[in-house]
Image (cartoon, rainbow, N blue to C red):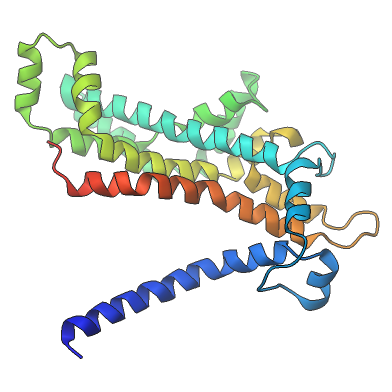
Length: 284
């Protein structure tokens, strides 16, 4: 066996083992969600299909549940989608605007202000969550999508990456835009945005997943079940697994967990080819 063949087999073997290792928990959760509650309690988690797939997912998606019986998984998925998309789009817009001002307006305090923004990476959400909550509560934005998204859209990480990207754009493009009488807004929209599509795609994917997986902030911001996100819903369903002497409905918890993983995976798969193509091609 040649060295190159052995290296190829070992590389693919590691990738296959990694895929199995990462996918096995999701597979077990999905298989367990297709079995009735008594089977899971008696035999534990399952590794193959049961006969209650449609029944379980129909009940989870469309039958109102929770403590107050006012929420469905479809509603929680909708709330999470609003949070994820708003979180990602808001961070891209704010980060790109801040980086554009710092790089191209070239005012005296640009560099110090950038480092002030960058230093906010040292302040996680948990540190500023009390004043943020107070501001949102005083504005009457609790239990609203606006109040859930806006306090989180400032991003030092996104600003840093866009700043570094803009600094690598050739100066000749700026000079050509000036000769063409292009103003700052036109230069940003017509030139920098198309050039930055790979960076935008990367930030969108990362921030969507981060926003989708938010737990602490939505937990504090939402007081009504119909405003819960899917991540909070997983926690809540474990709290009401056993009511009225009934069997714990573990299959519903597994179904909700599987549903929570689908949108982030779909976003990565949809953007993957375009993202990789943009990374390997020269766009400047």
